[in-house]
Image 1 (tube, rainbow, N blue to C red):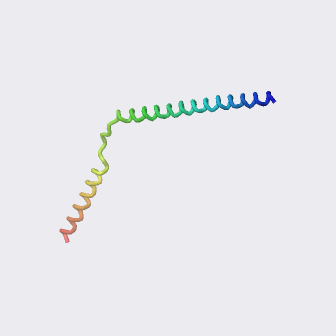
Image 2: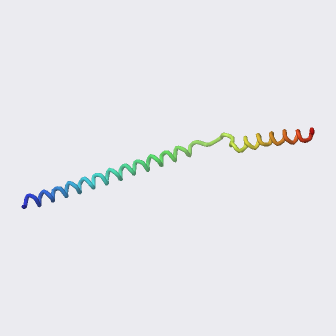
Image 3: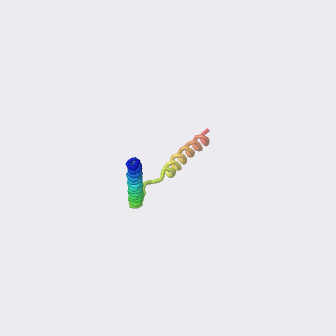
Length: 76
């Protein structure tokens, strides 16, 4: 009977050790993911967008279409 009680106690100890090991591993994984994500955000701040905005191109295109329509109306 005493052997069976000891084996249950040792199982609980090993189970507890496994749980703490997995908790530590999970915390370390989350910590690494957060650090990598923060580094990614910092790197993005170094790049400056100097390209023209798409809306400016669209405005010019729409302006040319509208002007061509108005010229056709005047010719008729």
